[in-house]
Length: 54
Image (cartoon, rainbow, N blue to C red; front, top):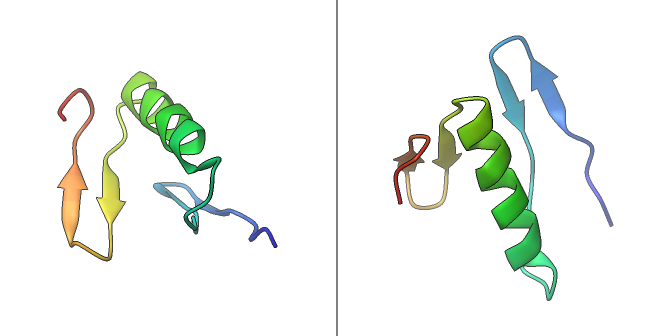
């Protein structure tokens, strides 16, 4: 089951679940975040991942 993206002027919220396709999805999300200088927020770990930092 897929969940639609929640998009605002200053954010995009997406729900991801673990599967065999998770790695490719996360890589694409990280690449887009870096390209558009977006911060990735992980609500489970409470970690922020700024663009270009691993």
